[in-house]
Amino acid sequence: MADIQTSAADKKEKEFFTHVPQEAPGFFLKGCHQYDWGLKNRLSRIFNPNDGRTVMLAFDHGYFQGPTTGLERVDQTILPLAPYADCLMLTRGIQRSVIPASTTKAIALRASGGTSMISPMEEWEGEIDGKKAKFGRPGFEPLSNESTALNIEEAIRLNASVLAVQVFIGSAYERQSLKNLTDLVDAASRYGIAVMGVTAVGRAMARTPQYFRLATRIMAELGANVVKCYYTDTEFDTVTSCCPVPIVIAGGKKLPELDALQMCANAIAQGASGVDMGRNIFQSDAPIAMMQAVQGVVHGGLTAEQGFAKYNDLKASGVK
Ligand code: 5RP
Image 1 (cartoon, rainbow, N blue to C red):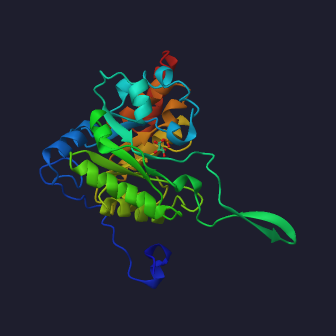
Image 2 (image 1 turned 30 degrees about the vertical axis):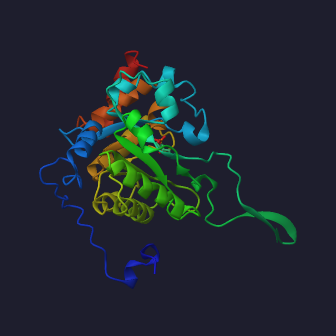
C-alpha cells in the first residue's frame, strides 16, 4: 500500500509540476501567506524578504554528539562566522553560555533531543553458519528515540524565531518523533513561532528522492512551517515542488569546498529556499571565507565556480 514501494509501472505517473511555482499572494515565502503577523515577521528574520532565501548556520550538533570537530570551542570558531549568517541554529545551552544577547541574528532553537551517539543498540543474539552473532533490530535507530527538549516559555525567553525538531520517518520511533513535531507546532503556533521539521537519516532512512519526498511532505502536512532535508543528486526539484512550505538543505559530511558550493547552487536552482549548513562551513580550512562564498551563491547569484573563486580570493588575502 505504501506509495514509496510502488513503481511507475504499477500506477498512474506522478505529476510534480516542477516548473510551476506555488503561489503565495501578498507574501514572499512559499506556503506562508496566510499566517498571522508575528509568524510572518519571524520568518522574515530568517528568510531575506528581498529574495526569499536564507543562510542558516547550523552548530547544534553537540546536542547528540558532544564536541563535534570544529565546535570544540564555539566562542572561538562560530562567533566570527555569525555576522555572515541570517540565522543561528543552536541549542539553548550554547545560546545562553556563548552567544552574546546583543546579537540581532534570528535564532533557530533546537527543541528535540534525549539520545546520544552512544545510545545502546537493540540487539538479538543468534547464529550464522553455526556461529554466534548479533543482529541489529531492523529499522531500529537508537538516535530516533527523542522527546521534545524545551517548553514554549523557554523558547519565548530565548526569543526563538523557529524551533527545530528532528523527525525520524521509517524508524522505530517515527510515531514519537512525529508527536514531538505536532506538540511543538501546537505550542509554537499559539505565539507565532515557527517550527522546522528536520529530516533525520540513518540506516533505515535512505537518502533518496522518494524518501525525502515522503518525509518532507509528511512534516509539512503535520504543520511544520519550514522543512530541512538533504540534497539529492537526482529529482531534487520534485522534493521541493511537492513540499508546500520552504525547504532548506543540510550540508552533511564535509565535502571539498567547490562540491559544497555546487550543492548549494543546485539546491537553490531546484527550489530550495536556502541552506542550513554546519560542517561544510565550520570544518572548512577557511570557515569565514566559505561562509561568505555560501552567502554569495545563495543571495548573490554567484555560480558555484564564482563562489569558489571568492572563497580562494578571500583565503589568499588572509581571511580565515
Ligand atoms: C542535526 C542537524 C544539523 O544541524 C544538520 O545536520 C546541519 O549540519 P550539517 O550541515 O553539518 O549536516 O540538524 O541533525
